[in-house]
Image (cartoon, rainbow, N blue to C red; front, side, top):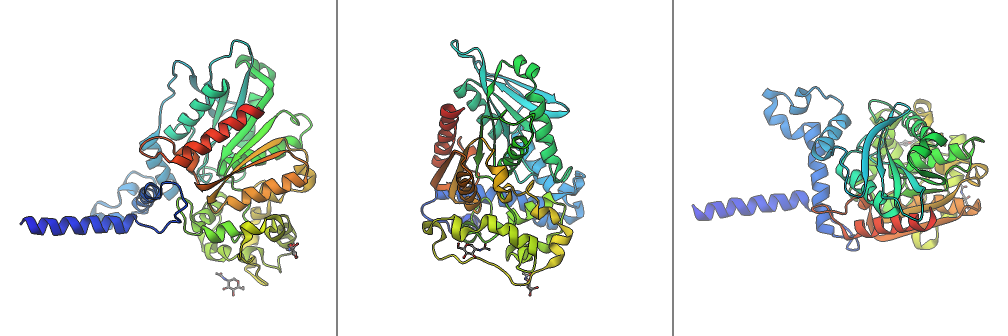
Length: 421
Ligand SMILES: *[C@@H]1O[C@H](CO)[C@@H](O)[C@H](O)[C@H]1NC(C)=O
Ligand SMILES: *[C@@H]1O[C@H](CO)[C@@H](O)[C@H](O)[C@H]1NC(C)=O
């Protein structure tokens, strides 16, 4: 009896280890913890696709039973039910949920500094593939709380609408509407914000929206120069080349494997998953697509990236591809989705910029190329690179999802804001 339960236990442990174990580069921060985090994500995803629940098919699938059919909606439902926090003020930071011109926001008002009556401010846009997350989940709530306290600042965290409720370019409209509302003199005054010290920031897909908003504002005579800095955390910046060295190197690295990133893009544009495989090999931007080929010159990494990054990776350029992809999803070539392809003329009006990139991230080279292009356009840029970082690490700073590199990236980001905002 003893022995058989021992055997069963060993088998279970082996099965769990098999499920959790994925080969990771030894240089990544806290690899076992990252495997556990990844396994959690994968289980949540499997739960939502229902594959684990087939055995219970008589009860139908739990999730469909709840009436949530769209799988991203379901995944977000899981994330939010696990981690949503209500607006809760601390002794130092006042937290309020309100709306700015119809867009929900969570506002964090840090403690005033006696010598400075007006506060600095950051408009923050959370990540999650334009489809997941919330300003109200624990991870973003804690980040903004800490920023408000350490910078004595007002942080506006935007609860923009997500896929599948809305698609491109509605997410942009939401963040633009909320930010424009906030920038009005009477609103800034209400929150005691210094109009000359406001920044825009975001991580991942939120970094994409922040970069797009910043380009849009810098082209608008009424909004030009209203933002002092932009700070982009491992931003998503282009969907033309899914074979940059970082995409090739990190193709299966958690928590953002390449095929997942391609699917987020497709969902953002309401496109078809039938194109995933073709897009992975750059069949949407083959040489017979003239416009795409011209735009790819803006992300020509053989010239934009140093040899230490390009190593032996080869560009993937198809002679002929699949013309249906751009016919059905022309937004792939829109600079409002891919700020990296904007003209130099647009880039040169951008404010001082911070870009954080991580080695173990498919998006590493999107960030490095943007830094390089901004530098060429005479914009002051800080590229903050983390050798042991992975996509998403900056929000994982507290137990049980605490990573050494999470704390270092967050501190480095907040320090940069402190010096430059
Ligand atoms: C890419 O396009 C080429 C040319 O049309 C085609 O032969 C190939 O099968 C496509 N690859 C994928 C993965 O769709
Ligand atoms: C990219 O840059 C390299 C080196 O400067 C050049 O040889 C190549 O033609 C460029 N490719 C494109 C698509 O512009």
